[in-house]
Length: 183
Image 1 (cartoon, helix red, strand yellow):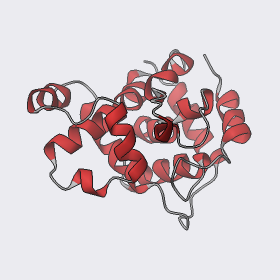
Image 2: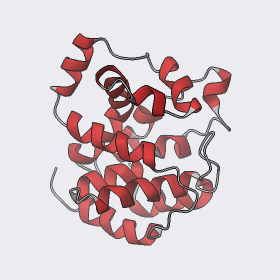
Image 3: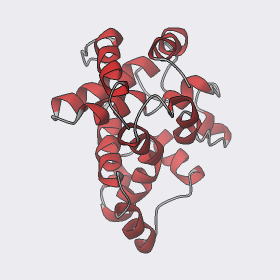
Image 4: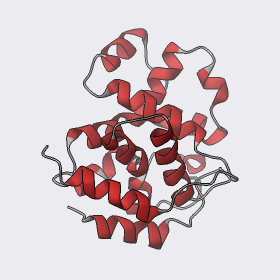
């Protein structure tokens, strides 16, 4: 299990890497996603999930744009063992489910796929493609699926090279708050 200080150190060590195919770094993407969640009035646990949803990229770096090389880094799963014990399912499950939320949104919103970046479209194919109607229905019925969908929507918007956000220390305080809550 990582500590909050170790999570911050991961962002310090690898957060300046570009977010594959986008005009922002890994750190900027994480801070923007968390800021969008906070601006929407999300619960602290969902804001924390928004901040950490792509931590798997920092824990298991695959280089620039792995999807272009046919690699699905399964980042949504990679971080969970490092965060389990520190955070409750209200943080962990939206992280774990945010890729499936993309598959769900593509199945249920006819315009969603067209709005995805080229890298998101490539990774979608590697991640199992668009859900069938039955799979989409089963997904959204699961606990935390609605949170994962909302996280995914903020994730899609968090690619703005000009967006100003609070820094990581601001959100580290939120992580501490979430970590101190009972699971």
